[in-house]
Length: 340
Ligand code: KG4
Ligand code: ZN
Image (cartoon, rainbow, N blue to C red):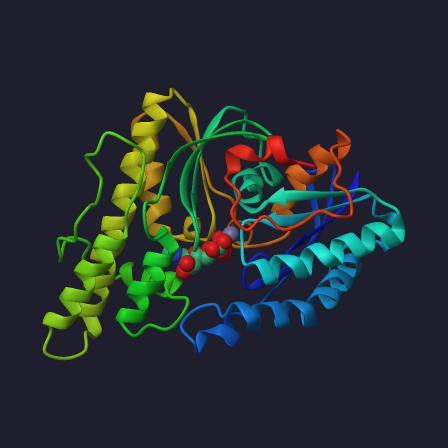
């Protein structure tokens, strides 16, 4: 089955063509980063407007790159939520219009479901597995028993991991979004230079909290007589990253042990982080578990990642009506109950 997928939940407008939920024929992403950078974060109204300008162009480009036309498309999968409501509505309205005009089935997919199934586009990962989903809006641990079968094991109580990276980057004057910049600086810094807190590390649950590390960074920056630069900046970045990554890895591995899950998937934008990839691979190997990371293009927001679940639901005939609406807050463990 040839499926057109559409993602517009935040600040990336993306369309992809995916065959049989496995083969990515095209995955086009138009980033709005430049638009939002000057405001230090995503401005929802601007995001919606940019999506409206970009969406048709991105879809045309995806079809062209895949070497197909709308006549070849047999189903449409679109991000239904969670996300910014105005942004989601652009993708949804476009998907519904195409489905209606072409008389092809449509299905709404959960954004995090896309992220945690993304590795299946590149390699075989047998169910069940543990998924750590870390992005700008989420830090969750899920048990994945199959497509549409998810259990939430833990979540962030405050900031998401990517949000913490972005806020700390802003405090250090590194621009927005700063996760990748912190990652680059950290590679040349001393991770033991500053002892940032490891929140909830020893708590007997699988929840996360990152706002305390951010506050510790704020005090650290304020305590300096001038701007943090040079090697000192690299050391601060490395120490911050070490604190976040250590909590993520230790809690993930503890969950894998407790729930006896042999395979671990790390997904979402923060899964691009080199320190996280290294430490998770090392710790998993020590415990004899396998860890899977999507390639960076499939970690960050993109439409291809919706292809796995989209294809499966469409094949099962779990299609949406044309009154399909956005779900801004949509816990992943409720997807099965709300596919219609
Ligand atoms: O999944 P994503 O593209 O969008 C959301 O759904 O939020 O994730 C974006 C987040 C941003 O916070 C960004 O700073 C972070 O992922 N990020 C990184 C890295 N690359 C992107 N964080 C740490 N290290 C990176 N290399
Ligand atoms: Zn995302």
